[in-house]
Length: 151
Image (cartoon, rainbow, N blue to C red; front, side, top):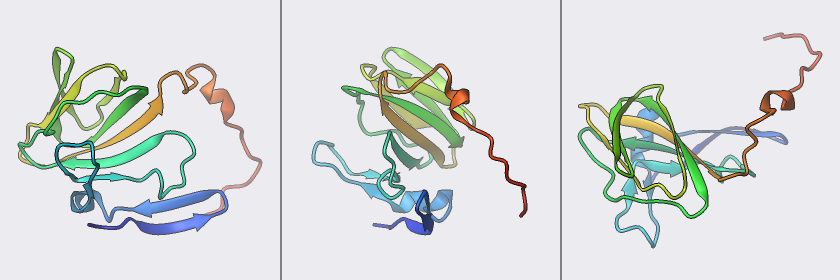
C-alpha cells in the first residue's frame, strides 16, 4: 500500500501528493463493512488535517465498475470527474460523465458508477454532512489582503 507524500506543511496549511493521477491506483482502501477492498482510493482528509468534510482521490481502471451500490446516512457527496469517461447510476437514473462533470448526490440516494472507456477514470469525492455547507454568502467569506504579488 502506498503512502501520501507530504510536499509542504506549515501552521496554516498542508500539501500532499499521490505522485500524479496514475499514483492513485497504488492505494487500497480497506474497511470492515465493505464487501471488498477498494483499489485506487485514498482518503486525503486526515493527511491534510481537514477539520470539515472528507476528501478522497480515486481511480477506476478501464471498463471496471464499483463492485457495490451504496448510500449514506448523513453525508452528501460531490463527485468531480478529473479525467476519463464513465456512467453513473443514481436511484433509477443513468447518465454519462466525463472530465469536468460535477455530481452532487444526496445521502439517501443509492449510487454506483463505472468506467466506460479504455483509459482510467480519475475522480475526487468530497463528503460533507447534509445541511452543514453554507450555500448563500460563501463568496463573502473571502477577504482581499493588501499584499503585492511577488513570485
